[in-house]
Image 1 (cartoon, rainbow, N blue to C red):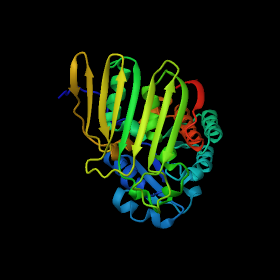
Image 2: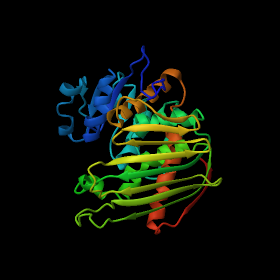
Image 3: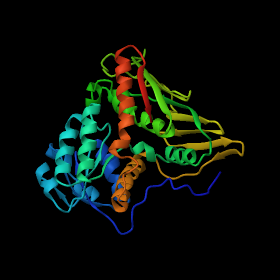
Length: 351
């Protein structure tokens, strides 16, 4: 086991705790956002949800200072510097526009928008205003993925040549939920974390094509609407590629999301959801890295941490809305490809 330090854990400036307002208080906020923020002692000013019952108990459980009667009330509060927008995508862009007009920095749930035009408009509005907009690509701070990213950036495996992800999961929990109604849910809403981390690992390479297929699995119940099976491929001009495969009706008792990153000088392998291990295999031998924490909730602290540091240091966050554009473009391209029976979508841009 290797214990030398890689800065994979989120942290916050000792002398800066900006006020945070939460917009949208669904299950993910209760299960991940707020536990992560409470763990790190963040300044949780208050929350608003269009369904008042969604905010019940938040002040008692997480120490929020107040519950707002309206979105206008929250955006008008000078104690709030950052708004964490955790609504569904179709609601997100109008709220983001209003938040920027109110002078707030933003952490927005992923995917940022329903289409590239809306996403680019928000990026332009944020940059005109001088405000920071980050996207909650919290998977980047899953401990194994974060360690892998730092090792790749440090040259531990040379140039990345191939990325592989396998989803060995059971998606029965989706049936009957709002997620089951989202077109291309498995690609657009779920897999965007994997498209995002893959383009981070392939950073600097020129994208060539993206293709994807969705399919129902034999043991998927008839009442389910979203496909539980998926394969997607990303090709780069120089030959590097990525492959994602989802088996969403797994009968295994030991489910996980395994990954492999092959490079010219070595290989990384690991597991997330659950975050079990990350291992470097190169000419120096095999090194398995110790780490603490899990994607849920620590990844959510990481996304907010990067935004807070970017405000404190007056720079763009690593998970900025502009940086997210490539991840969103890849995701939307997989949806387009799936609608055309896997026909590749052409690109010619550096990711």
